[in-house]
Length: 398
Image (cartoon, rainbow, N blue to C red; front, side, top):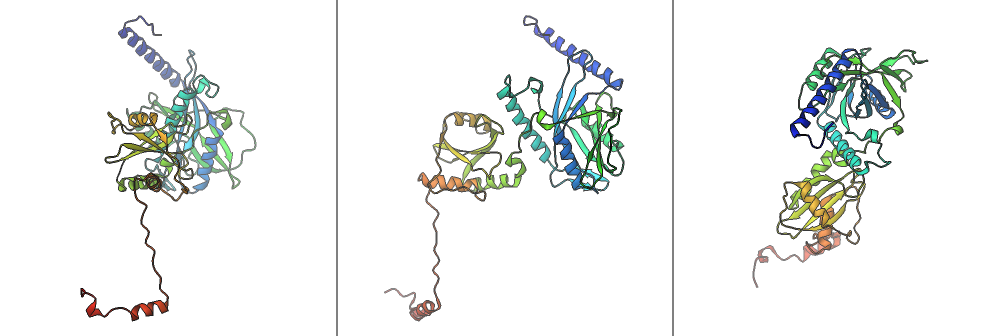
């Protein structure tokens, strides 16, 4: 424990010794086959079943997120809580004996969930809205994947992959959960009296899905079975709904390009605008020579929900490269912009359409000119042809 009057080097020494003590205790416990407690949300297991049902003939898998809660008692075990699973994007490779995670979508979603959970903790710490037990960071816990046949243990390739992740200092992972999903089992009539590391779950085709839970620590370097406990999803914290900017990446790119093409400088960021999660995805824009910024705020379910717009004056000392710091200063000076008369948002519209409508209403730009085509009937067309001047007189000047 730190003592306020201790020299700084003694405080650092105590912290380092405490870290070593916990590490040695953990290694000793795991060397005896002792592994953490494991608690599963019913939601996570249901998402596994849904994904496995879609790819009965192929391998598949998802990332898992949750908490790890330490126990400070001498022989206490940490508890891992699996709250949710995250699907890969469309670039994932699924074949009968191969599964490869997709591109960066899962990382984007995990980051989004972590940012929202961090704000939730800061906002509700010490209140009934946040249990002190769950006042811990949200973490990536590992990946589950479905294997063919009855391969209920991780393969040698799974071991090599897990060790490479654990040895990567940038990952900063001490452990991984590597559950294995297999399908096609006969329905289980009664529960086993023995402690096992698997769970059976009925599927729509009348068979069962089996999930075997495995744990690996960087200091032990082998997979160990871990016994899961299934709990109702409502007894655990809920994860935030995914933000549109994550799941509609193409739309985000199109929105940004449209604003840039209209001559605006554009910056984007996540920000808490209304005191609650999910966080808002925001843009701030300005035209060259303008005296004010335009702030655009979108909810997580944009474009179904309409954006909101605000003005903020240009002030000295802004560092536009630091989007968060700049937006904080502008947000403190903001004033709302009412929607233009007759304006109606629809999901087919884009932010640039909203900007144009606002600027027209404020007199900052002219309305788009509309050309009205003249359609002549057959009689009118003949009359126009009859009175057309001769070709050799068209260029004459009276």
